[in-house]
Structure formats: structure tokens, C-alpha cells
Length: 420
Image (cartoon, rainbow, N blue to C red; front, side, top):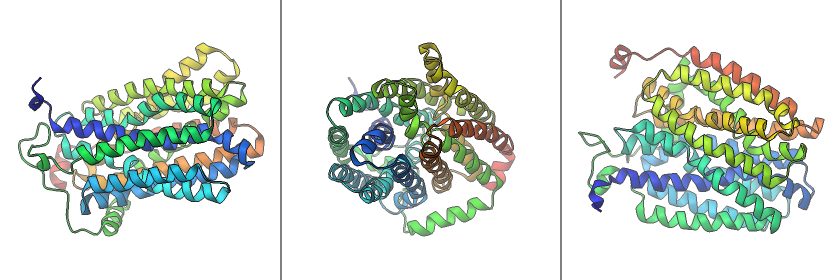
């Protein structure tokens, strides 16, 4: 085999894909940990959800600053520090005994360290290493969280059920150590570091290292964004995206299913089953984002997601495998499909050089929505001993999001030339 035919961009994509899996699984395993924490420590579901909500929110708000750190330092250094801190936090979790331990370790430390992987890294890699096939690369990278969900959630639920939640934490820790070594050996900051051009490029990109202060770069991006109607429409729709996915389904779906009489492993397997179609849907979305009007893609994604959430309680109450499988397929195809079109629209309107920080702030809105749903779901359960109200609200919000995305003005070639 002639390895020279394999562009180094694909190696970077694989390392990034695996790195995101660790951070994403750490976030999504909150659904598996909810009831074990409740049973062992006696903490209320609202209190536990509050820690997870802080984690999700801090992941989002770290994004603009992570983009600045990528510009100031090398991406390799940032990822090594982020993964090292994440692994330390996982170890500390196994020793916690107080609710404030959960808030500090899982809420703050994991929230900030996971932000190095779950915010702008995919955008950075796609725009830095790929000139051609960028949408496909972005779709593949975005699907990494679904791949982790598919592989690990049933495994973690099995480990929790047959051993302990601490054993499940250590399972992720061991995998994370392997990924840390992969980052150390293979991750590079720029194609020039290995003497190549970005995939499909004719000219070399400028290096992304510069003397800009990361905090200043983040707030300069925010100042630019808040002046634009497009920024607010994308941020608003992405708030709803986070509310209706990672915050609600990612945190409370397993507990919702258990409330309807399903076993934890069954619920986690159903969530993993969604992950199969999540990978397919997100990859296809990346492909279509290079070819179709991204506003209409988002319209259909949000509209169909809203309808699926409205019928979910009915599907669970029927105890029908057919209805649950139909929901898993339908919702799974749509779960993270919104990301490639959102990034594509942000890139079209703000340019490749600014999209990292701008998207970081848009993603902050996504995680703010996710945090609201994570805590709101726990609160709704504490008040009503049921989740139906929060899932109904999420479905209605998704319908509202369709109106947001259709109000985004299409960026024409003339507009792009004028803003260049």
C-alpha cells in the first residue's frame, strides 16, 4: 500500500473523531448516571440535573475562548491540556461524596475541559485541513458524538447494572488515556506542519498562530456577531437545537423510558440505536450542505424533529417496539443534522477567518439551551413526577425554530464579493 496517497487531513480527522467521542460520551453518560447517583447519594433529580446543566452550559461558553486559544497556541497543546484535565476529573468523580463535589468536578471541570473538543474543534479541522470535501468532513466529525453514543451507552448501562457506576467511569477513563496518546503522537496544528496543502487546495493557508489575546478575540467576535440579524437567528435556532437534543434527550431520555417501565440497558440501547441513524443523518447533512439551500435544510430538520418529540410520549406509552424503533430512526436521522448547515450559513455570512469565533458564540447559545433543558427536565420531574410537559415544550420550540431559519437572508455571490 502506498501511504503517500492518504492525505494527512484524514489522519487529523480520525484523531479528532476519536477525541470528540471521549468528551461527548462524558457528557451523554449523564443520562446513565442520573438514577445511580440518585439511589446511592439520595440527591434529588433536580439537584443532579443542575450539575449536568452547568457542565453543558460551560461547554458552550468555552467555545469562543477555545477558538482564541487555537489562534494563540497550537491546537495540539490545547487538546492535550483539555484531555488531561478531563481524565483527571473522571478520576475525581469516583471519589465524590457530596453534591458540591458533583457541581465542581462534573459541572465546572468537565464542562470547561470538554469544551476544547465539543465546540469549535470540528469547524477548525474542517476549515483548516479541507478545501475540498469540507462538508463531508464536517458531517463525519459532527457524527462522532453519535458514534460514541452508539458504542458506549449500552456498554456503560451494562457496566452500571452489573458492576457499578464507578466502573463505568473508569471504562471511559481507560479509553481516554489511549486517545491522549493519539493526540500526542498524531495531532498537528496546520497542514504546513507536515509539508502539505489542505486537501484539494492550490495555495497554502496562513498559520493560525498569532499574537491575538484569546479573550479579546472572543469578545471581538461577539461584538461583530451581535450587530448581525443572521447571528441572532442562528443563535436562537441553535438554542432550540440544544434544548431539544443533548439537554433533553441526552440527559433525560433514559430516565423517561425507565418511568414507562423499560430497563436501563434497553433505554440506553434505544439511544444507541438512534446513534446509528444520527451518523447517517449527520454525514448526509454535511453532503447536502455543500449542494442545497441550507435554510431549507434547517427548516425541515427542526420541523420534523418537533413533530417527533410531540409524539414520543405516545410512542412510549404504547409499549410497541415498532413505534419506538420508528421514533429512534426518525429522530436519530435529525439529531445533529442541524450542525453542518448552521456552520455553512455562518461561514457564508461571516467568512472563513471569523467563523471559528462566531460559531463558538452560536454554539454557546446551543449549550445554553441544552443546559436549560437539562435542568428544566429535572425540575419538571420534581414538580409533576413526569416529563411530558418538557418534551411537549421542546416540540413546540422546534416548530418556532423553523420560522427563525427561514428569515435568514440568503448570501449571494454579490454579497460575498462586497463583504470580502
